[in-house]
Image (cartoon, rainbow, N blue to C red; front, side, top):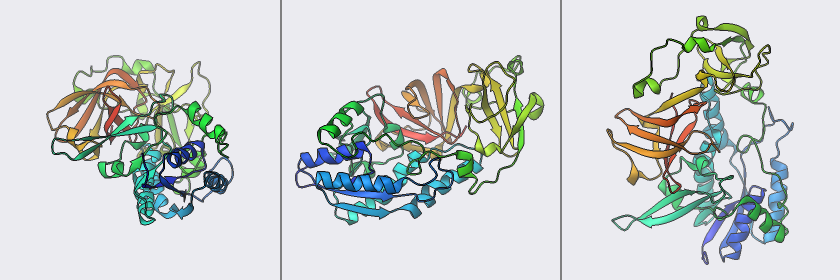
Length: 394
């Protein structure tokens, strides 16, 4: 299938990219591996040091086992500038970014892709659980479709929601048709060194971190009030009948609730967060329902069903709307029904997209928990094609 194609595999040392490389080699491709070093700072990592040296060692062993050339590239400067600095900036502004989405669009399928092409690659392959199809438009030009992975428990298409047609034209996802157990089985049958390696967790290429400690590299801790908003606050509030009203989060003031504790800085918390609040005296857990970065106040609500945790709609600034399929882009005044998710692994939710001249509104069939500014909303067709995404503004 890929005979004569020179394909660079982003070999991370994990089982997914290892099997991706193995399958391409078996299909006759001219495969070579590139290991990316994207982070080398241990500040805030829970393991006390960066794990990239161990990952590099495993990746080298996998390349030897498969018998493919191995290359190393240091992209840590690009990663810090294009992912980590963005992440710090978003948290400082009171939003919660998704660095993994940016890691794919800015690093794996941009900086890394360019390096691979310089080494003679025709295409780049990764171990993502998603699929790609190619069709033609009316003019006979190729149109690349990004589809959910066959394994519903591992589908990673959401993390690729900011890719464009040019990036997809060079991308391969060799394991997208497989389930995780099938990938493990192939790795064990081939006796790959990564066969039983645990999946990496945490921030892309950084690992598991103590987020406040990690962020305090650039953001100073500053104590402030944690204010609880009680359910009776919502009694008698004007009904939210219009789309614009539904898409706006509640705006709280300190006088609307009761100070129940202190926090280390509003920028270190996210909507829906439960752990790390260290405030007792409640029958049910407390959750972050809002935060005011300018006043350094974190607002809390008690219980999973607290009304402050739920929204019926959100909006995306028109400049932040991204279409993987530009030929499917909506025009102002147009409305369409899609399946939407607002975080990784969230089940797809039925929603209507309403395009206006300045905004894209997403109106959900059912109220959504923990709508978080800075995260990405991604929309899919019923068939599982990811068409576009946008950064949640409010």
